[in-house]
Length: 179
Image (cartoon, rainbow, N blue to C red):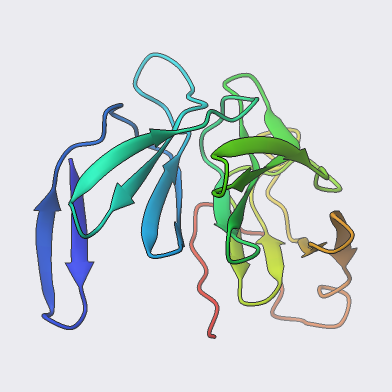
């Protein structure tokens, strides 16, 4: 089941179902389309991704990631690209990132995070931040933030918690960036 919200009409409407049922997925908006990636179908972790054409109200399969994952984040890094950040493979939290280029529908490896991270959040508004989550040991909550440089395809850890007393370990949350 998929629903979409029209902020102009202040209305939620049903969409056609995705070709693959999934939960614990990541989603992002790219070029006016909603992209849903990975997740879990109740039996296995998924590498597939789908694009919703909002005008036609139909889902279209797009390329598969190299590594199946769930409980990860995704956000756009350019007009034509988005990045899938970390996640849980079914066996472990991962640091791997993958980049989808919508011009050809293909995924390519991106630079890995500085540490494995799942159940965190990634937000982009000109820059991509990977925030909190669970680390290598799934019982280890993270209080770290990483910044992605798309030009260099590199992540670096920001030293925010050393100067901010409100910084604390977190997972299972969402974050939103203002444009």
